[in-house]
Image 1 (tube, rainbow, N blue to C red):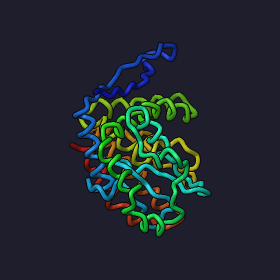
Image 2 (cartoon, one colour; image 1 turned 90 degrees about the vertical axis):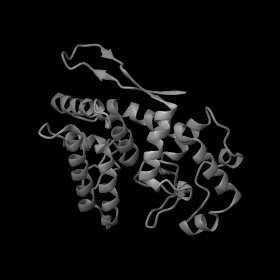
Image 3 (cartoon, rainbow, N blue to C red; image 1 turned 60 degrees about the vertical axis):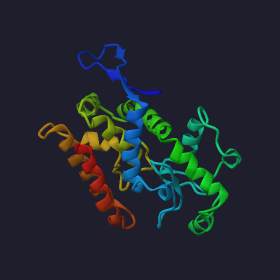
Image 4 (cartoon, one colour; image 1 turned 30 degrees about the vertical axis):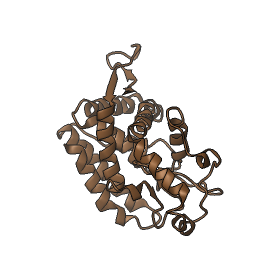
Amino acid sequence: MAFRLTILLLLICSPLSLLAQPSITLTEKQAQAIGQKIWHNEGSGKVENLTVWNKGEDFPSFGIGHFIWYPAGINGPFTESFPQLLAHLKQSTVLPDWLNETHDAPWHSRDSFYANINSREMKSLRRLLQETIPQQVDFIVLRMEAALPKMLAALPTQAQRDHVQTQFYRVAQQPPGVYALIDYVNFKGEGTSVKEKYKGEGWGLLQVLENMRNNKPVMQEFVYAADFVLSRRVQNAPRDETRWLPGWHKRLQTYLN
């Protein structure tokens, strides 16, 4: 099995140049390795952390990437990615029947979620998520594939688009760069949603690339810029998010090797 991340490359030499489509190919072994790193980042590599509902959040999250699934009646500010993951898994995997019968997360609160944490349904979900790590990486890769054109389209000037595109490819060409780009998009999104901003400032991959400069080694610069936008998010947050910063900082360090 191979997973292909097709990156749309706008050739810098001329604004009239045609689009090229170089590819990054991940073998199943590489996808599994990246998935294990993401799972460790998000859930310490523990099976029980494939199904969680964090304190202070209005939704549960699932899988190696902690994909969000909103209960009925909740329309939060973050992109709901778990239903999209299920649609992706259906292409190659048989889902437990109950997952085909519900659109919204079937738990109305964190208390009801944990009251059912060892139910037949929850056990079948954890088993599914543990057995589909490469497919979850494939899903994250597809999000990454769509990220660059969306990011470029969100910028108002050609100079800004050129800068973001240049930084994207500087990172992608580094040995840990593909993992870093994939993981950050999964971690904090593309940065193009108007809802994912505090005080008008986003924290996604777009904002990281915008804040990169060319005065440090590439991955150090990426981590520095990511640290800046995440710290700014906490400063701008409407509620205290400082408890997340140590874990975020630790995660960014995995991009350096």
